[in-house]
Length: 564
Image (tube, helix red, strand yellow):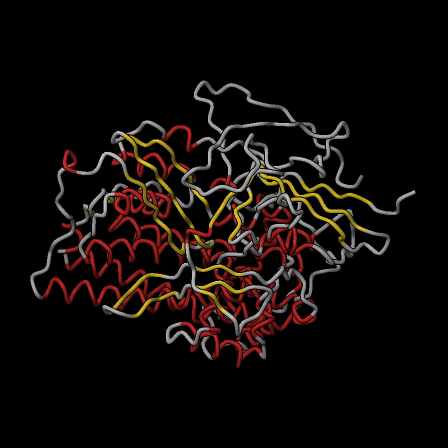
């Protein structure tokens, strides 16, 4: 009789979209196999077929309600690439300002509101000594963010009132008191203080994004050929409003976010050094975001097997998608330009578990030269250090010196969060370089934001891609145009890379690989599994989605108990 046990987590909460994770553990509660399954059919590409290429951006941004700007931009850029349209520098800068502000907002929201409670025991904060908590915060920064004893007492009182009234809301149903928590009551309180402050700031960053994007989510400032934000670009008050919010956010990152990451590294050092959440070490970056006329914010490259000394150049022609383990008809690896989205659902096992030997996810399996890759802040920060980036390496060196981390330590659940915090700091700082470039252009009477073209004179047959580093990793939109209409469209998104199911050669995607070897303290409360999965900042809405315009029930699933 097998001593292995299967654990089902469905749905995984505190993410965007619908994700199911199943893990198999041995008699020592160590994960020996894992399956990550996107639970909604992907249909956006089908909707885009036959459309005017100039319209696809408005539709493609609806892939997700969080990542709207980046899908909008990648889609518009794919069409521009197909038609060989070069946009004005001002348009590129405005696009970068919006995207980088989104980076900062996304990273803050992810850590504090989606992931921090995997490290922070909210109920543990109720026994904190507020005087000691203030002293704890001062260990990580000389001037901690909103750190008076009186303020910490008010935070503690607010948390206590939630618990006493039974109104935990989004704090309900947590694994409070779990053996895998490592922070002291005082450290928990400091984190919860910043959790509440981040709620206010992420709202303010939305205002900054909307200054140039028109609104958020689902901005309306991009068109094929440039942007429509001319009046905002030429209005000094609008520029000042944008910069004021970014400066305030930068203050929070410096005095709260980065110190909190140092606290997490210190508190969870043992699990980090044991490699908890480490994947196969294949990292992919496309680079980009040029400022000052020459320097790029991110550097592109490909790392395999944690070999930081051997880096290949990124080439988008090596990207393929396959569906041998995904619920689609065509199994063979194909270029995104040729890939289709024909569903072929094979159902679950009779006991409600995934058919782990067959197709088991609506997420496809992107591969680079046939290999699974991890994308995201971790990949970008490791790539920056390994390639001696003038932008990234000084920030990472400073963080590693303060925490005692080695580069390999970032390839863990804790390390992914540390990399994300460092990246938020970098993005905040370099937003001002892009603002400087914009002001310099305006100063010398360059106010252009759109490249004029005649649609009738554009080629009727073309293909192109828009590939960008976005908050969760490498995003690619691929369009093939025939008879001036969209003949085929595919989006290869960061979560598709990371949440990939196994391929025909049984190679795991990043989520699954990072779970192997994980030891659970309590199989009935698999906090460690959630900690690993959340460290990637899943956005399954980007990877899979379903649409029924009549609001009808599409499918019904019955999920068994957690442990089988």
